[in-house]
Amino acid sequence: MDQYTVTVRTSTTYDVVIGAGLLGQAGAYLRSCTAAQRVLLVSDRNVYRRYGAAVTQAMAGFSVSPFVIEPGEGAKSMETLAKLLNAAAGHGLRRQDGIVALGGGVVGDLAGLAAALYMRGIPYVQMPTTLLSAVDASVGGKTAVDLPGGKNLAGAFWQPACVLCDCTALDTLPPGEFANGMAEVIKYGVIRDPEILSAAERGATGLPRLIARCVAIKRDLVEADERDVGVRRLLNFGHTIGHALEKASGYTLGHGAAVAVGMVYATKLAEQTGLCAGMSPRLSRCLEKYGLPVSPAYPWQMLVPLMELDKKNAGSRAVTMVLPLTWGQCQLVAFPPEELLARLTEIDREDKT
Image (cartoon, rainbow, N blue to C red; front, side, top):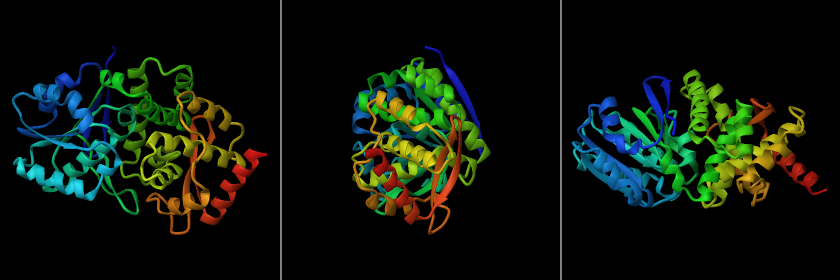
């Protein structure tokens, strides 16, 4: 399996390494990017059962303490964050010591925020074990937990010291988890590189190279806009609707599945407003190839108010959407909530006729 390295140059510089057998080299990479002696290994129960012992062994010479959470979005809470911070203090972590996030996006978001807060910031390393985290959550320095009002409302920008994406860990993903990741892969094809969409249509072979291409696109956008106030917001294609769907489902709907629906309807909205033409059928077919949904299970009357709470909105009476213009090009468009509700309702009405 080929190995790729994508270097991210933001407020700090770090490498995203993509290949096989990287979990077994965890200690070497940790030594190369930190001065840590003590490490808090954060993982969820399923991932830790599969990889925890091997990663701990690979970090021989470090004082390693595990912090294991339950799988799922429910663990991404202020309560779990407080327990994690107390665990870091209990393990005696100092400023040069580190936190290792071994798992998917929930683990990475939670561990990254703890690293940003503990002693006002300590190093952390991302070791994504899901495709979704590999191409999205583990890169770019966004860390957060959820609040009752919505997803990722309490967070910080804190860049990792290194990201190790061991593609052999992705071989054990259930089909639904792999599909969640493919939704984010397809997103990159729409917003920046149509060849990624073509690769997804062919069946997503050559996964390390495909991941590296997605990470490189995110790298470019993050370097240009680390604090997410400009061009980086294009990465939110499908996410405004997607986050509302996740919230409406009580976070039982996977992130990628929710974003898939969001991308389709953002594209239909762009077609309706004349920004693009004929893009949604191809996008829907590509998503359905991986068993992803392309229509919401909840009414827009429920979803639009949740979309108003999205932290990326431009103002109190506007919902900001990322809409495609053509394959590889998107723009931000703000809608008053009433107009957005009417437009989305009309799209569904037209689809049924």
